[in-house]
Image (cartoon, rainbow, N blue to C red; front, side, top):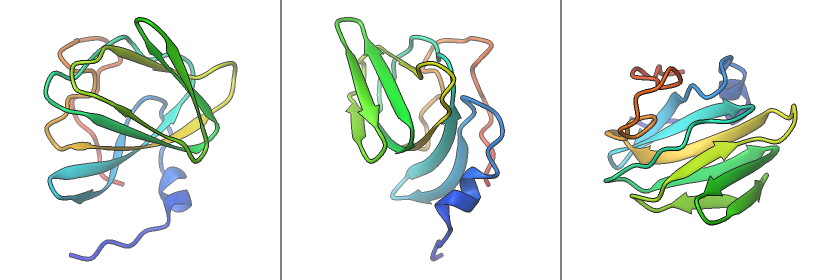
Length: 122
C-alpha cells in the first residue's frame, strides 16, 4: 500500500504529550509522531535503536554522562541499550518524528505512569 500524508496535518491530530501516534510503517518499522513538553523518564531499549528527527522546536536528550541538544532538522540516533531521558526546556512544545521497530516498547522495560502500552494510528 502506498502511503502519502501531510506531516503537519498528522501532527494536528496529536493532542497528548509523550504519547506516540503511528503515522506509517515501512520495513518492519513504525513512523511515529510525538509532541513533547517537559521530561520523559530515564529508560533504555535493550534490542532496538531509536531514531529521533526533530521537526519543530529544540529538544534535549540526556545521557548518564552528557546531554545532546537537538534542533529542528537534526537527527539523533540512540543505540540499543543506551539509557536516555528525552526532555524539552521551558514551555516550548517540540514535535518529534521517531523511526523504530514495531516491537519497541514505549519506555523500554520500565513500567511507569507515562508508559503507553497502546499506540494509536492517526
